[in-house]
Image (cartoon, rainbow over all chains, first blue to last red; front, side, top):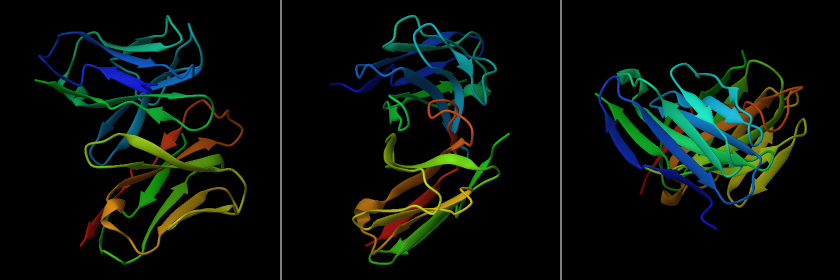
Length: 110
Length: 114
């Protein structure tokens, strides 16, 4: 099992550009999450999904959109990137309770 | 909204010394989880506590959940260089589900000097 994978690992965007981060899990977990991690801020929940076709807002959803068209995939989109979105993005999945994290995507917006 | 505070933010210890990090929630929690993140890595689940006053041990690590289910602690006995990393607590609010919004503390960065 690969567990939770994220693509890409690194990305540099210019302000205003768009991109999609892909998260995939092969553990048949119902629940999936997107977090951002900034120094001194811990992990902040952006959006999450409790099953295929569902999404919900987390703590910091503004500027992001998500889709869960397939159970194993959870996509995070940035429509118009801003420097404030420079961060490390982690995806996680969960059967219920403990969460399993992917390796992260380091995004820089210039 | 629910807030989870963790102290200290940083802790430097000599190898062999003990280490403790504390977690406090502004609201009652249904359960609390602890994660470890090695430098450059991703968070890895360590343990979940559910019951009031619960204490669990994993080798040199001892986890406690407060009687009021609003605070928790992680204690490491005789630290080793392999303990280096950031330790996060995270909790689900009381009355919530176990798959919804998990609120993380800011983490405690542990450095161990050999």
